Length: 341
Figure 1 (spheres, rainbow, N blue to C red):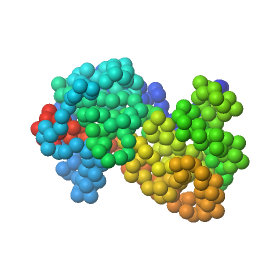
Figure 2: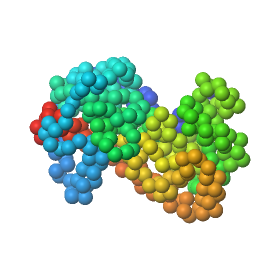
Figure 3: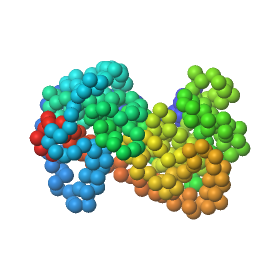
Figure 4: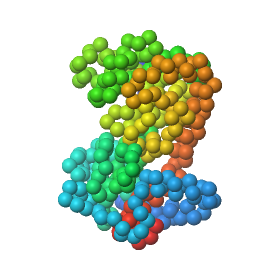
């Protein structure tokens, strides 16, 4: 890949240099200084208007469904372990899984504000099961009784990417669906077996280890190139579809069945055919749905507008930090380690 091709491929993606330099620096600074600022940051909530307070509380209680009552939940059992915050280490192992660097750095961004003698449960990686005791996670199933999965904004370097400026309007794009996926899972394989080679689809596999269909293997495609298409595939992988955020910030339609997992992006709150183009779980109606929005561009543009409105809520960095602190603070109150919310 030439330098020009690499720069085009990296366009719209988060900067590794900026992310790691800032987060490693933050990791080296003693947490004492952040702890001194915590109460002042949390007090910002009391100075907000009622609508803003209700919005923030709704999100805090969405991510953290534990009761507000002090010491109301059990923190350990025989299968899950909790760790001192002081034990958060790069490349550390938590509950049997070695944590990727980004997970620890993103967790530390919030946990540095609390006493390092506090303990918490951590499940890092693509979490698809609900833990037996309350743990901080990146992802969880969208279903009832998932209150033990407390969501933080983890691995955001990979997942929280947004298009800065999509120069093409929906009507100017190709009447096709683009799909560039890492084929590992059966449901992704099923989609490709149905639609690879279809005249309305441009599909490719980025996983070189997948040998079953060598004809699917393609070179990486930049986000910029994918923006030439009206429809962009957003199939879940091990958990959520990592490309969903940037698709919803573009002028293309995200195409997917209703999600079954959610992260900080609150995929469980997305409304089918309002925020994205919904297809059936068996994918059988893909062509019909695409033809509908090709011939009804005004409805497609309404979905795009709603998607843009949805993602705007994540752009306020100070508010996102406050919500993250309140999610963690609620956890330490519910587990009996902190006596006020």
